[in-house]
Structure formats: C-alpha cells, structure tokens
Length: 205
Image (cartoon, rainbow, N blue to C red; front, side, top):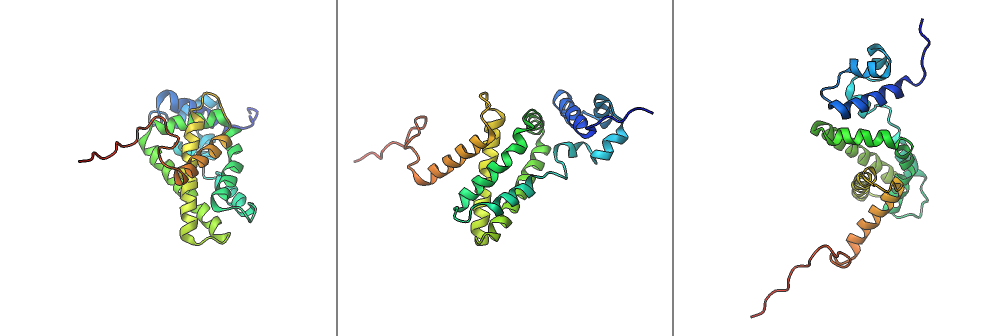
C-alpha cells in the first residue's frame, strides 16, 4: 500500500491552477489535475465536487472573517472606517497565498462564465457586510450602501494588487483605494487630476 501523502488538497489546487492557466479552464479535465498532483480522481472528488470548486471553495473563511472584523471594530468608527478595518483584517488571507491567488485571478479573467461567478461571490460578501453593519446600529439602506462601496473598493484594490509590479501589500491598496473614494466625494473632480482636461467654458455672445 502506498504511503499517504500530506496536503492533498493543496497539491490538487496548485495542479489545477497551473493547468487552467496553461490549457484553459474548459479544456482541463479532473483526470489531468489528479495526474499532475500525483493523486487519483477519487482523491480529487474527496476534496472538490467539481473543477469550479477549486476556484470557488465552499469552505472559504472570508465571509466569517469579515463579519467578525466588522463586529469587533471600535464602536466610534464611522461606517467606511469600519469597512476599511474589516477589509484590511481580511488581507492576510490573500497575501499568504499570493502566487496562487494571482494564478486564480488570471484564470477568472480569461473566462466570462467564471467572471459572473466571481461577481456573484462579491455580491454575497456585500450582503454579509450589510448584515454585520446593520447589527452595529446602521439602518439597512445605509449599511447596504456602505457595504457596496466597500466591496467595490475591495474589487478595485484587489485588481491593483494582483497587477502591482512593486508588490505592495493588499492592505496598502485597500487603504489607498478607499482614500480615493473619499477624495471623489469631497473634492472638485479636476482638482488633482492632471490627466483630465476640464470642460471648456461656455462661449459668450
């Protein structure tokens, strides 16, 4: 009997992402993933129900982490600061697996159906944040708006992070993007934008 090898799930995930990027998600089979990982198809299905679950695991701890971080944020923080706190608390989940996360994102970017699934996942996270903010005392409409802003900010920050040649931490991009969102709401749209030409004044006469 062969000796059981540890971290089978991790090996399968790594093998799957390598194949998805090399061959494309649709062209990759479970048999190929298992063979690349040095495991059997039966072992694959012990850990994943299908190829898609490699990218969208059912046991993702992100929602629970965001809920806990939102609940435990200092009580005097305004809503967007609570969101900033929660998202930066979640950043290590991605940073500790940066290479795999970037591979995953490349697969999703290349496949429209996977992009739809990713958007649905982000919408579910917005709902999670809405509930957590509502429990802190915000009315439902305000909580939903703050959560939507937070998730839109996270999406933009995440894209910057995955493509950042300088490899700044994800938390850095989250704070920077939220600061940009605040700037948009409090400053003239052309105040600090040297790349955009303001509209010409109306002609007189």
